[in-house]
Image 1 (tube, rainbow, N blue to C red):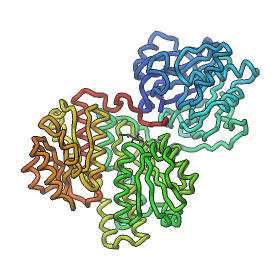
Image 2 (image 1 turned 90 degrees about the horizontal axis):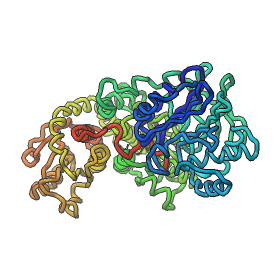
Image 3 (image 1 turned 30 degrees about the vertical axis):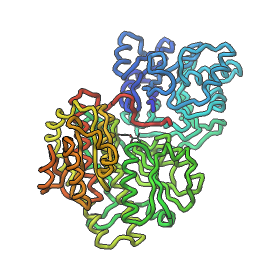
Image 4 (image 1 turned 135 degrees about the vertical axis):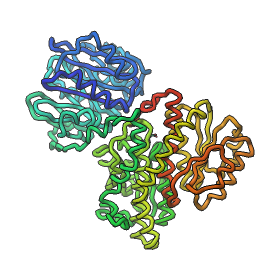
Length: 614
Ligand code: F6R
């Protein structure tokens, strides 16, 4: 996590750095800091606990002059969130300043060695160890900064994206990455740095995504140079980024999350564009053409993901098994990577990740690759680490997701999983032609049905205050709606801080039913499908114990209102696509409850958008 920004050129660095930090605040907001070489040649470091606004308040009366600087927004790993542990960190002499995203795993050993040599530390962070090590090497071996960074990076174990400036050489920034993202923007006589392209795109669309193990030597007046840790010059792969600035601003909505919920119909159209034909009866994924043999050869599919992406994976499992008749397992990437799983070359491993940077998912990919599996990625962030680590994949193309709670990425992931399952089922002939066509057609109708589902917003806004005093909530669903119950509960937990559980509705009587009383809201996804009657029985079980039921039902439903306290009506669709529609009221419910509780919806406490540490 943590966000990195850098600038060197002829403009004032401070406004560029602050604007960039605000764009990256989704990566963490425990503290923020900036280091700039001032017009008079001082290396000034300013930092503040909490959000970027605290930093700007702090800097109000400070010297923020200078045309070179680095800045950081932190999600704490080593050392409590505080100004002391905030980045940038100075070296002992205050000649160098560093920012870092990642974890230096052997920092304690290096720190002990440096302390034994008399180096004094000011913070508890692993990051300070790195800058002290670089300085120690510069002095001891009389090396220039870039070579000292090379030597230091040889000694550290862990993940990093770093940027370092040296007040004795204000025309240079050195940046490096291993397993944490870093992008260099190339302008006219100026350069930018970012953890992703969002802090850069106001100024240039020419970027270089730094590769693992590489160092960027950014010098004013010279071309960008990329070298390996060993000092070998690397080919410069300049890409053009295509992110619309409007896409990452709030567009009139109060929060990014609300904007992103409302964007979903359009996002899904973008996701299907060029993949489903205009007649709406055929799906093609380019990965399916290029890697047909590998994908059709799958004896088993293993899905690895975390959080919301894992919930999308649970829906994928049902699609792959019922439509394609391929056995499928869904694994938490963080568990999979450490439990010596059986993976073979006959497996296709699908890694799902919005950010494309989740450390556990990346490690799970690595493990599966080593065991010969074919890796397929389903990601949103273009050019991020996961798509680059996979054999092939499909982007969900829903645009940047800024709200920390994932919304449009979830429905984009489920849409790509649906398209992939349909492609595989058609090729494997495990689906009849009629059903295939019906399903493809229905998928193209989902954006319109989402528009209808979004009309529940007003009703949900009115309902939300009823639930703000709840301490616990239960979400129930069956079949395709069970992963959605998990997702609904996760949304509520993460932004309103109300404890919530998602359960398969029939499992409730094996334990959680004991929790039910009139104080606990129960949300039931009770759309009309194969298990509808059974879900009605589950609702009655809740009612019989005094539970308060809010049910999501299909339009035309007359039965459930007899038992439910509140009913939210949704358009009908095929059972397997129901989560695409029903996720909308659940997202809105979590959103409005959190807003009623006065919570910071887009930046919930303790969370970060991109989890690049394990
Ligand atoms: C929840 C949420 C997280 C992410 C998880 C994986 O709203 O956003 O649970 O889904 O951290 O992130 P990605 O998909 O970027 O790998």
